Each structure stands twice: as C-alpha cells, then as structure tokens.
Image (cartoon, rainbow, N blue to C red; front, side):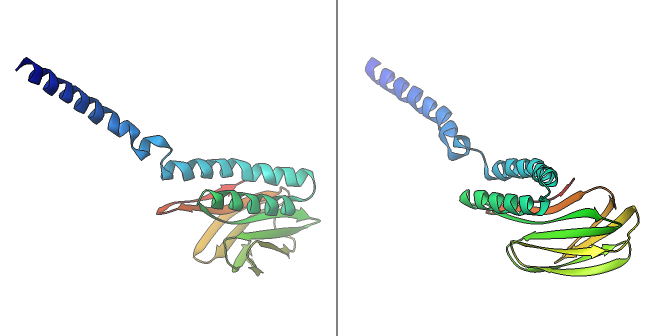
Length: 183
C-alpha cells in the first residue's frame, strides 16, 4: 500500500512539472511573435531611411542612395518572409524652382499626383524606379498634396530645405503595419 502512494505521488509531481514547463516550451516563447518582429523591423526602417537620405545629400546622390537602400531592405525583408512596400519622395531647391523625385517600391507601377500650392503634375513611376518633375517658383513654405492609389498625404514643407517623405507598409501573414516617415 505504501508503495502505491509513493508511485502516485511521484506521478503527480512529474505531471505538475510537465504542466508548469510546457507553456515555456511552446513556440510562442521560442522566438518573437510575428507582430513584434515586423514592429521592430518598421522601427529600424523608420530610423534608417532618414539616415540614408542624409548620407545621399552629403554625397550629392540622395536619389541613388535611397534606391539602393530601398532595394536592400526589400530584399532583407523577403528573406524573413516579410513583404515591404514603400513609396518615397524627396524635394530639393534648384535655383528658384523645386525638384521633386519620387521612388516607387510598391511592387507595381503607379501614377503619383503632386500638387504644390495649386500647381499639379502627375508622374508615372515604374516599380523599383524613380521619376522627377520640377515646379517653377513655389513659395518658400509650400503645401504638397501627394496622391497615389487610395493614399493621400498633405504636407507643409520648406522650399530651401531638402525634404524626405515616405509611405511604408510591412506585412507578414495577416499582420500589417502602415506608416509614414518624414525628415
């Protein structure tokens, strides 16, 4: 009789240990959750895009630095089964005019309508490419309305400052983060 109590007691102790340890061994505790994974990625990209833009300004090749960076992060994301889409634009003063360059990394060709204080130009931008347009003599502080697909952004920018703006979407499975980056 005493032996049976010891066996039942030992079995209960083993069962309690298994129940207590099992949640710690589940897949959710082995690595970051998907939402956390893409959240961290978005935060990193949010910090690095302005750095790539500033590096490009210093080396007089802002457009090319941003193209290279956009291609690099899209490739890195795809290696982690993450879909990354972005559309960015930069504004730069040229004499008394304003040059706007748009980079399309959405995964498809798109048309972008730019409205600078009432003057409207539409750019067709192929996927993974850039396109530029010039606005003549805008005010020193101008309103820029950007329209593409179903997205509209309204920005108040300075003409004599190089500006960077991006719409970014990161998706993994059913998790998705959409945001804007301004610098």
